[in-house]
Image (spheres, rainbow, N blue to C red):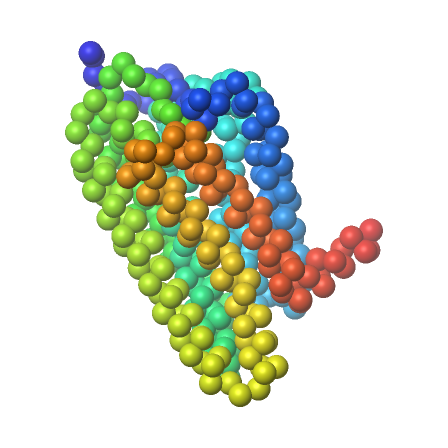
Length: 312
């Protein structure tokens, strides 16, 4: 079997299957997928618009919500245009450049989102445990710098992934049983040794997800300890309410992320269509629900969002 290396001269070396085993139902599957994508796009765009328009919302917490909205849009948009081409028009071919670019953006935005969630947990920790110093510790400028650090970290960790894949030899089988170019899904199609890819993926997951989850858990354990020391029931309730939306978003994001990651590497007994469907839900459902959760739980944002339809 002839092997080849990935080079930009290969016009369409990969074929994305979509959801394996459910090809006949692709047109029906596209309905919830496109609906989730449009709702997420509109919701996150609304958050960006309202926060940008309202001077009173130019605060660290709302800047973090804007960063989360941008990562949500980036995650779903990295996948859905090509996914809908597969589901609607059966256009399954993808070029080397397109595949590697998609791989980079999906994983980089995911790592960036994790950094935003850690910063949001730290924001809540300072707001509840050290409220008098909140304005001096977390300024808009400092939030922007933390966002830049998160972006640099994402590029630093993820850029090697497409570079490592581009060095692998690939044989005649060029069909990827997935909806998008996920790192290990592409690497597994190689007829060479992809141990370096596997090990690098594990290192990134351990450093990024492991470290970020540890920091988030530490922040919320300190928050819970501080809340339990508050004698006033009203203050108790207010402190917990400020954290509820953040906890919901984090549970939703990390649970689906970990499930997708673990099944891709260790879930040989799980049917392909189950894994691919959940992998797509990870990129679609949190971006759709995040603006809804924050819109409902954050009174200041809810009031400002409600103001615009009323004006019309």
